[in-house]
Image 1 (cartoon, rainbow, N blue to C red):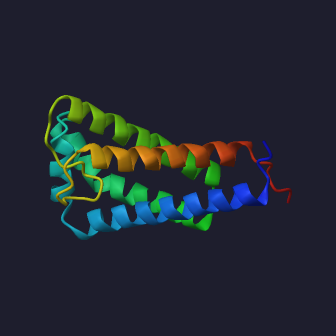
Image 2: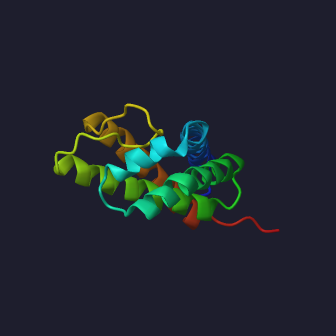
Length: 147
């Protein structure tokens, strides 16, 4: 497959911008509300001790914002695409775990909103994960620009 084709470039560009906007928006929603709302969503997964819940609730939105900005600008694309894929994979696995355990909880994707895990949230996040993996593969196998 020709990973340097213009058509593939524009598809990757669209994925990069869409993921960037989503990550910036998710970070914004979490940062505009008190961090305790996001901490509540995280704690509902029943995985982390309270001190880690607080750390994640306070730091993850800033990391999401950084990744969103990197995706939008196209800087450090291999790093940002890979990091987004790892984050989305982690989120997706945790959501599947919660769903299989019958936990009717807020996914936490967009802060303290009422976004209960369902087939719709799984489809949404699974699609974002597939797109981010495609972007990661494209960014890692495309020829690098020569300076």
